[in-house]
Length: 84
Image 1 (spheres, rainbow, N blue to C red):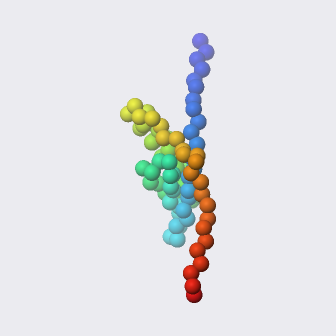
Image 2 (image 1 turned 30 degrees about the vertical axis):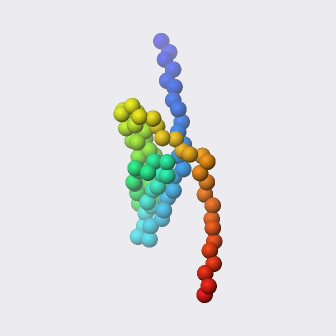
Image 3 (image 1 turned 120 degrees about the horizontal axis):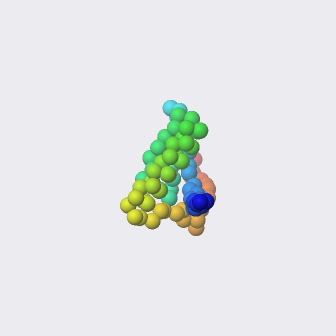
């Protein structure tokens, strides 16, 4: 018997903040409960993926909806000039 497993892909914006002492803090705006870190960018990305998976699995176990990213939010840069 051939059973097909269906899956849904979730995509989240992840910010990696380089730290002066080395390594990277990880921020996932759509999942504010995530707090992770990595010594290298690769490790930080792996830890971010694992943390996202844990949040999704926890939400499913507790019968909650899986948070989706708000795509109407956007990033921009604003410059401010101050008198010298």
